[in-house]
Amino acid sequence: MVIRKTFTILMVCALSTLSFSPSLVKAQPIKDLTDSKQITCRRFVAGTYILSTFLNGEFVGRRVITLTLDGNFFSIDSNQGGSQGVPKAAQSFPNNRFTDGQGVWKCSQSGEFIATAFNFNFPAPQSTGPVTTGRADYRATFNPVSQTVEGTFEIRTFNLSANPLDNNVPVGEGEPFRFTFTGERVTVRN
Image (cartoon, rainbow, N blue to C red; front, side, top):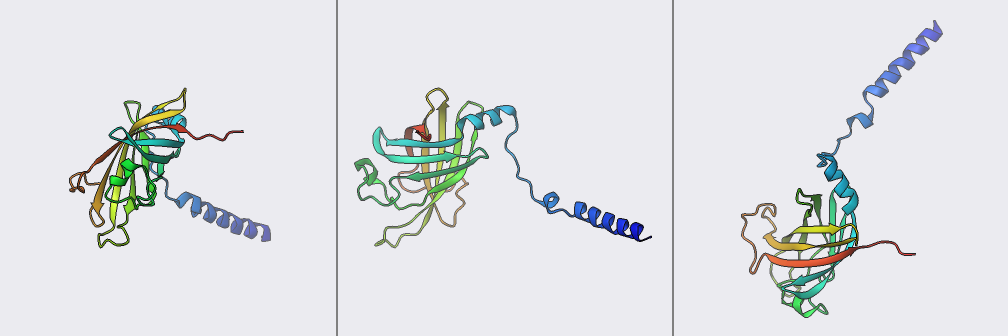
């Protein structure tokens, strides 16, 4: 009788644990990997790259981008601390006080990778201007032999309260800024 009672209690506990296991209730990410080509492309392209960026053919600085296997995108730029000490071509921008960028990327049907990233732009200390949101849209190709990338990105700014995903929102003066870039994959060297 004691064994039967103990067995019954253990079974109830085991079934309860299986029925309400936290691993069964966790939210699952929605995957953009619709086919094997997307998976294969991401495996080849994911990594960190150091870029040389150009505006109208003039060097404006360096940028580091990271594309993760799961589709996250991160960027940092040599000009984001202000206009002091940056290349001459970068000194003409209305504001060089902005945060790192974060967003998403994927491989396109045409063999490129595309990405969208956001950052925040801060007014100069003496300015009364508002903080704005910046959106950068990237298109690039990856060369698996040389481990290099080449492409373009456009930057637009939006009022902080505006939706930066809405292409119909007016952009700042002179925008979008269109940049070209070349770069190479960062690897650990012995």
